[in-house]
Image 1 (cartoon, rainbow, N blue to C red):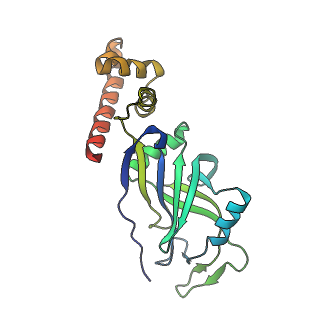
Image 2 (image 1 turned 135 degrees about the vertical axis):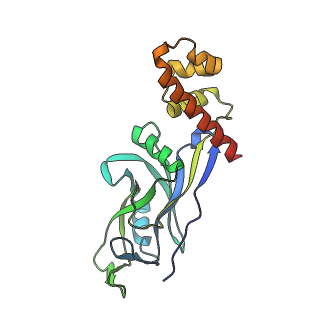
Image 3 (image 1 turned 120 degrees about the horizontal axis):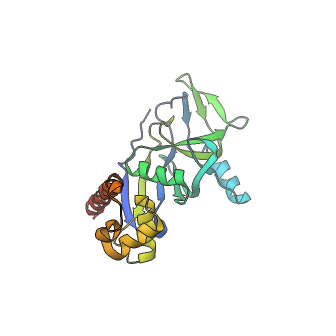
Length: 225
């Protein structure tokens, strides 16, 4: 059986309007069984995706299969011969989504599906596990340990600090560095000196952490060009 190998994750630095947009393979077809012994066959998602479209619904985008922890929305799907490619957008105002975004950028996360198998949607495979021919797709989660090792995130869009919109940059700096609104405005107006001029001496550890984040962001932006 063939094994599908996704390409290394790609990072794209764009305007803040698209920050948090990402894509990856929610499931791949054929290949070795996943950790549950299942192999998904091409066409397994066709009816479920059509039903979501006709009913105006979409699978949930969850954190670690937790139904109480939505972190964004799935915007569209591309069903290819390799597998089901999912294109989503994280809601970065949600703390867990912001954390997921940072972990995605470190290639520390993958995708995993939550589903039901309708009657007749499963048959026994030669490998001793199940062949899934039809799946009712309920949700796709961002996880640390996927059942299918090939269900990887393949691209992540991040905020570009060269975006000329000051208000958007201020918001992104606040989110990325953990600054208050007041601190972000001081950073915008006076740079690093403006940020630290009114800080107390006992804030040195916090400022050192912010400085380290700024250095990492600078390195990432240089590497993306």
